[in-house]
Amino acid sequence: MAAKPVIGINMDYRPSRKEHAALSFVAAGYYDNIIQSGGIPVILPPLEDEDDLMRLLDTLDGVVLIGGADLDPRRDGYMPHPAVRPLEERREDFDRMLAKQVCARHLPVLAIGCGMQLLNITEGGTLFLHLPEDQPQTFPHKDLLDPAHRHGLLVEPDSVMERVYGDGEIRVNSMHHMAIDDLANGFRVTARSPDGVIEAIESNIDGWFAVGTQFHPEAESASALDAKIFEEFIVGITGEVPAMRLVA
Image (cartoon, rainbow, N blue to C red; front, side, top):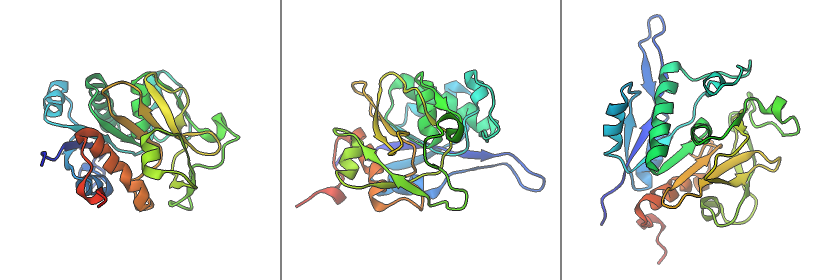
């Protein structure tokens, strides 16, 4: 049996607040799904030294870029928008450095939520900063009163998304107001919501397994089917179907 792949997971960050110490944290769904899919998760702290990060990445077989708040548009040359709630500076500094190295190395990556947006930005794509204004014809992709808000998903053939969902009506959770505008070179869209918003992307570059989802397969609002995206990620790294998925 081949050794289990080691998967790095970045973390969210909250600076100290009065009596509360600074914290790094990550939703358990990320590492639980990696474990259940046959990988070994390793939590990545927000390093500042790129040489330290490069040494750490040398030990990993893949990376999960987690979701969170919004990327700061000013870092990409855009004016701020009042609806944008930026990531903490320390986290975004690290996440951008991490994404740059992941893309340069073509390290296998599963990018979720703002992680997918960062993957697209890093490879030269652009973002809508606020869908209700930039694409007013779209339906709501975030419901502040319903954290389990869901919408339909249209899946493209010959994709990881098709292997996970197959045919038929699909619904996924939705909790975002930013989205991909121009898609980065080297990627293709593999799922959209019925209003046309990009919900999943995959690399077209030979030898690079890179998948992004705007929805959150790690969340409590995800279905058991959504979680199989993590299995496909592990399969994409190892080339081996986990025993739990083998059919007699």
